[in-house]
Amino acid sequence: MKQLGDILIDSLKFAREGRHLVGEVPVHSLQRLVDVLADDEGTLAWNAAGKRDAENKLFLVIEVSGELHLKCQRCLAALAFQMKIRSNLQLVAPGAAWPDEGLEDDRADPIEALEEQSLLSLVEDEVLLALPIAPRHGFCSLPGYSRESAPASPFSALSLLKKH
Ligand SMILES: [Zn+2]
Image: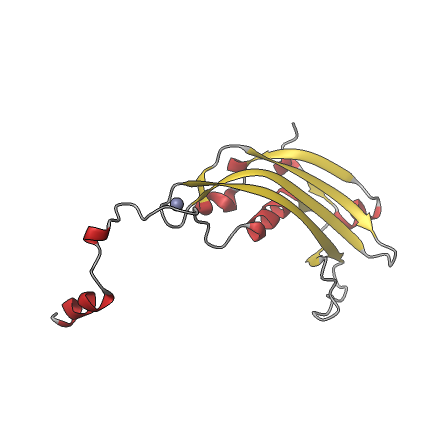
């Protein structure tokens, strides 16, 4: 199994030559995910392909799949989340004009082309973008929460505050 962290690609060359790499990355090596995970078990499978379109534009197509255990924002327990990403990244050469907002291809996100692009960081970027903003179970409750301990209404809580 390849260790993704070790793979640096020249992204323009990779795309021009239509290269293709696949591998797996242990979830615990995706450091920027630490805060949103309940645990870092498991691995994600990734697939990186270089592509050149009819207009000679160069792309990296990044696919990531696997399961993450996100932290539920309500009960803080683990919430299984199936990743299935396919991102089309348009490479913008250093010094080249950035695609105009309006003219941008909706199916592609522009990124700066690097001579030493880490695939790990690209995969991590795409995973972060694909995460739900506030992951929650369909049905769960706050830890230690019960109806008895909650204030009867927001107004009774307010009147308590006013006394101080
Ligand atoms: Zn929950």
